[in-house]
Image (cartoon, rainbow, N blue to C red; front, side):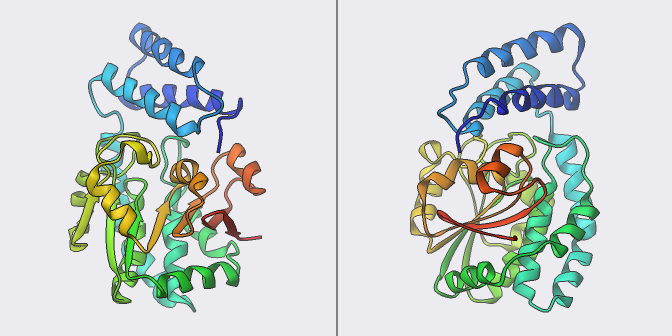
Length: 289
């Protein structure tokens, strides 16, 4: 993924959305927006979009002096926990529980305040269980899982991590050693260790963070602990569009990307439409069609 000219208004949209969440407007908001605009104006079109937005959001947090998404992250952690019994019932009633768990995990990827102002969580769940996922995609995932002992699970957003729980538990029931990885510091509404604690995911014994505040997974700045887990994994399940942006160029066959398409640039790159659910392995696209 490379930065497209169409990404630039999205970058500015993230600035105004973040200022709104922080309750900042007027003269102070304009000053901060102009500083962020300087970063956006210098965005390299040869880089993935997530590298520019990482710098933008780092500046915004520094200027604001707070985590502007802290409150809404906690809110969606609670909302998702309330939905967990329903998700478990849906997966238990699915003809194929592993497929149901994958669909549930993808449904949670809609909790993305870097892109959305409003979220229809129930609609996302319904769509994720209705949209097609071809048998070959699921079979390829299952074969990789069966052949793997150590699985690294790259989380994406707060709240969304609750949707991941059903899949994580199924993997553990299959006897897999699963390492759950979150961000090392706040960025947008991405999950951190604090969100793991809020959602009571401490039942998963191997919990790590990646040691940085990068959007997606920027391997060159990840911690030694994370990189050890990354290199030793037999299979890597990567949630979210930003992780796709930052990792797809590695063409690593261990990688499986699970996400909802939420951007016209990504949609064109994949030959999809916004809202589609995608399962992609390394350089091979395995998605509903």
